[in-house]
Image (cartoon, rainbow, N blue to C red; front, side, top):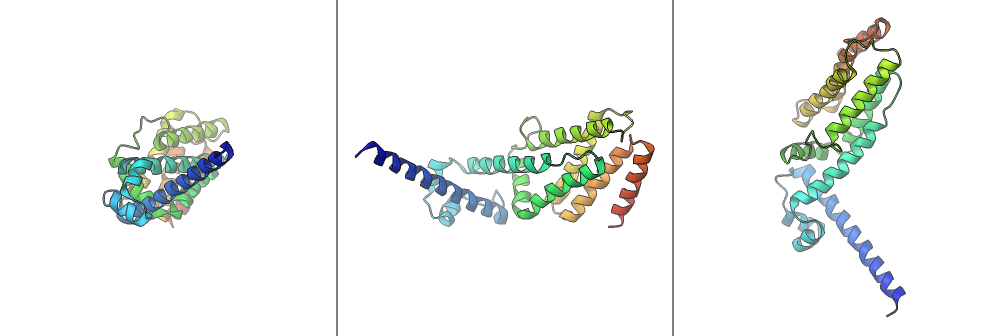
Length: 222
């Protein structure tokens, strides 16, 4: 057998392995969405993915390793959605930020809810991780506040980092309420924006302060 034939064979095997891995991840995602992380098992995953349990062990390892891979993909996707929200006007920027995020969640709401719950329990969303979702959110909040100050919307009497922490807190609290089923995505959006606008108002220049009050009043009627 010549080298070209061997190379083609290796390429085919690698392609099949990649497809098999993706199939298993897709089924795992579905099981987590419908049953939750704690309820789904490798034997069930193997059955629905039409592979053997040893195959799953060989390709991924344990159940935790599969979830870890799904979370890594999720964090990257959310990071892209959040980072595409840089707008010079803070109000428009806040709306683009939350709308990008919620459009993503709406595509597979059950999975994102289940993944956040399981991620918290398994410590995959530790605040200290520089590549984690919380760190990314805080960095974006800091950029938004810094831009608002540079563009003359804020007075600068409150440290940018302090304002950013409050903006981050608004989003995190709303996310927790949504994860636990207390609010839907529509209310999530309203809750985040009102919190962000009230945070801006603490250091806003007079004309911007008036705009913020109008937006808060508008959102409160929804």
